[in-house]
Length: 292
Image (spheres, rainbow, N blue to C red):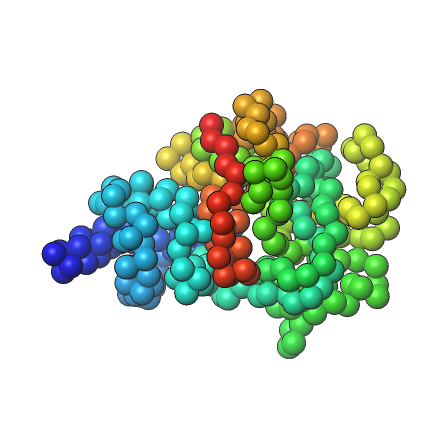
């Protein structure tokens, strides 16, 4: 029986790898750049699935061998997978390990509202202190996202990195992860590594109807346009809790666009937030979720 289960998992994994591509799907989940699926990567990627095979089996065996549902299951249950497995998956997503920045002041944009100006999202983020996680964005020997952020302490800027927002991990927190199907092809901001300037704290800023609060900061972030049709990829933005159906307008291209003056929210492919939180904290409890 165990061998039959293993063979079934391998066949499903191979179909995924040779079809849509496991690396492509997972890299999209992390919002990372997606390289071409060269043949010489197949064995490496298949080895990754084998390394996490038992964990994936326990979490998602009920949807095998449906590849589409398998991908959705891994996205949905990323926070329930062991840290060792998530570490391998996220490394494969980005093509490099994520970096944990210890005991720093950083900008947390995960729940930020943003205004679009000339193709760039300007997002109202929270100033936090503690441990956070990001792609390393290496800029030379011994220079990466953490050292750049450390330099900003004296130079009046900071970098946007990630930690799990408290608001979505508590029933009383007032926030939830809204899962957008991707079919609406809306736009969202991705702020990992975004640069933020301290001069924007406790001031007015174009596009925001109220002054930026003390303890918040404006960060500049690139915009991702969600794909539609056969290439649609589910993504998540953070919004109010209890769930508000009207908030799903920010999943749709009719509202969330790349045009100057549009309001969009920070987002990421489904599963990313929970996966990064596992790497940062070792485990993730239930989070508030809203679905279309």
